[in-house]
Image (cartoon, rainbow, N blue to C red):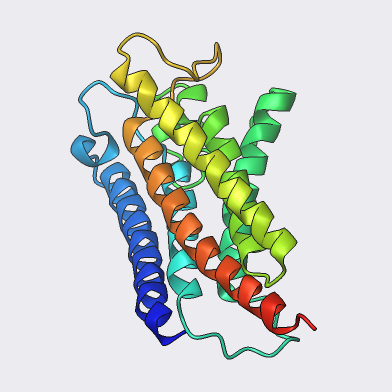
Length: 226
């Protein structure tokens, strides 16, 4: 039992570090929009920039992962915590964006942080892609489910993180394949490169955290076996 403790702590520290990395990159992108630093908004010149609302979603999810690594001394009644609120906020961004696509409406959530940017760009160019919105929803479900100790919810968390990782990797294959982009829609540009990369990092952090909790569930069920 004691030989497993260092590896568990190591995985936890890696997950926390990856969450902090995602949040920092999201903050740098928002600063890039604020001060018009094009190198922070996009990795490759001419590539689609990461949208401000997308960067905000990464900040929320990254901070949630970072907060999850703190020792949990809450009581059973204190279920709603700051890290859960952050996850719900990121999921709401994804749901609101998909609602805009489905109903063909504009709610203004895309330009909420930088309303002046909408004048220099078309309305649709400030909106994150459908796949990015879906990934935010999947990431939110995975992180919320991963906070529970039941094996079923841990399985949901694992499946959600794997789905996010698969979508992000397919988007990266689009860049490696040149003209072939797997997620190109008539109404939206492709997922930006660093958006796909951050989803990969986010999913890996979620998988590390869910793996640790799955081991805890397995140990608990083994101890309770008659």
